[in-house]
Length: 559
Image (cartoon, rainbow, N blue to C red; front, side, top):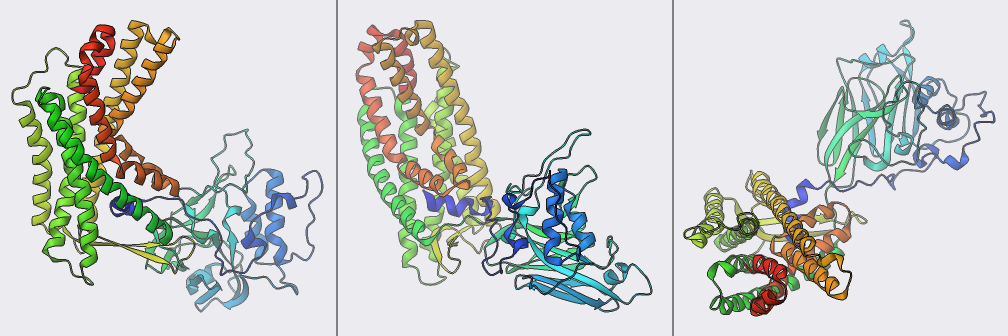
């Protein structure tokens, strides 16, 4: 269910950030990025402008670094850029001016970047104390010129890869790096920091101010040492105690366009409606089956099916009811629906865990699995624990109307609003509660049940290896192999392993679609599993005669 995923996991999203330059910026060589095809062969002499033209400094320094397989092109750039000649050509997003060192300076090379430099920093940059004026250069450079590389061991050589898109622990916001150079002396350890403002038009999270640091061994990387970050929402303000090449490493909030939002919503509603119908059918089948089988055989499946019914039904009710609310109104009905949805979700994962525990007893404690009032004890955990958590959350005022704004990745003016009766946006600790109960707990459940499924596969392999079924190579052996694969697949649905596909939603949009389709139809798969249990229970006797090893696994699966 994609909407449930978005509401509970959107704040943890670390989806890839776009490294494209802002469309508002004019294009030149610095903002366009390096073109390796334009680089001359290192066997030939690299032409250098005798006039030290500003427009040629970047390309010449970078080409020289490529030929010498070093990352020290920034040192060459800093040495030449403050003494370069503008010439007659116009250089977009490039500001070279002479400022008075006794006064503060503020420069904006682009509409998205602004630099404020205190007078103390300008005075320190002077090469001669008697000088009053200093040359100040500010510009933006495409982030592909800055390729983080590992430290090189002595005696080794590492070539630059200018087309690499790796940028430390994030991507460069807007794909542009702000270069600031003043005077002829390095400016470090300032008591009064410089201020850099990076304006953005995308919804971002976890932005951090960094600068480009080059080591003596030729390696380069992004570092946040000496910089503080302040995100105002519309801009990221960096306060740094030195001059260098600055950027903001970010991870954007999971972005889903309005069109995909509508499509995924329809998939979720249809899948949940089908799950409600088929879970009811599964309960009817399990009730009929229970008359002929011991309660332990299908009792856990019935409880899990009931929890899934509550989950999908609660989701549909909360989704449709919130549409009837006006404005910021919540009401007691919405709070109750939020409680019911949260409770049913916790109950579903609890019973998935108990399915795994039941499977463990059957596979490991084969000869001593009698537990007095077994189903009653499981029910106390499966229903009691979610009830306790939901009641505590209700008393704390967690539940209410939840609203989430989804911004289109291609059209920043296009947004979609998702409203649900869930955890209220007004509750201050909503993210903490959401993380513990809807992220951390399901992850532990999926991890535990994955181990249980692995144990099933190991047992299947041991049984088949002992009977030689997988070594015959005949059609009967292939049929058994296919049936075992279906058994493992069915158990994966019962154990809730498709919820682990939530990790794929961080990679691409298709991952969200896959997650939505599979999990919204979990009730349908439970129905198919119930039908399989019915058929297996009817053929237990004949199977035990023809294939004792198959009967062993069938008994385990049924129980």
